[in-house]
Image (cartoon, rainbow, N blue to C red; front, side, top):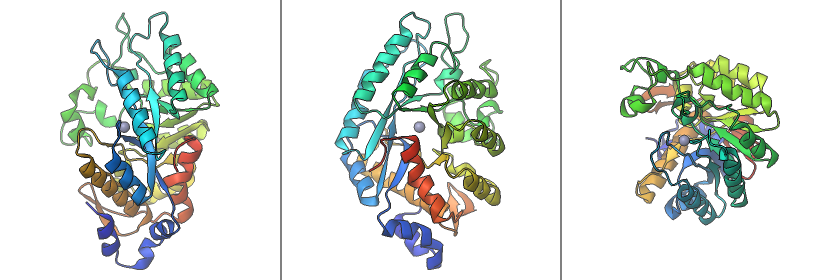
Length: 348
Ligand SMILES: [Zn+2]
């Protein structure tokens, strides 16, 4: 993996580094719009500060059945971490959508969401268990535009916060689980999210339910995680971005799709939709030693700067590729300005 020093040393000619260096030289602060820290991690916060990054810590409630999950503890730890970071790490809360059929579900969920706004949350994340694993009493899968959820989105819109939506998965979740599956490494380790033959809603039904939220609440800003789960179909994503002006996407854990895609088509896509794409990693600190975690996150950031800003041949997660060499004006949007607009409150 490229470190910052390697990046500077390996670049064969100064002009290849021009955009990244120009941005760094003027103290350009970059933003990672999607990662997972969930605690006070001074080593990570110090490293972000030293390297000129800030970001967004996104909560999820990753359960579907009756298993216990202490959402309050997660929200509390995340907001405390955000405060300890001095605002460098903003945070977004989430909802526990289980029990969506109970009478007071919506009111309780809204009350909790509003409480997290008082506690500094700049948005609310909904997760793929909506559409793929939470079911009602009669067995039907909960879809993201269920009537029980709509008033929650309305409350988020009214509060001027952002809905961050990781709904559905890459196509690989619905393809046979073999070595040809581009997501084999993930689904072989996380078979509960491999949907083929399980009777869950088709991917397009989940995304269409999300699209109905976009149409129903045109003033609600929605950031679709992971290229809005259209990472395999930039043409479909382009159509959705054209149709819904309130929709943007993050690149979390999906820069690798750009790295292995058709370089010219990827540059054209990023150029055309330069106001609608937020750079992100999906980095997760988990139980890692924070100092090691800080180094890993910095290495991810440096690798991705080299990919988007540089033009050199490079390795991206084990595959050879070439940097996109995007111009400064687009890099500024991708690495900062779009996040500031779509996620007000993020960044220093
Ligand atoms: Zn994530």
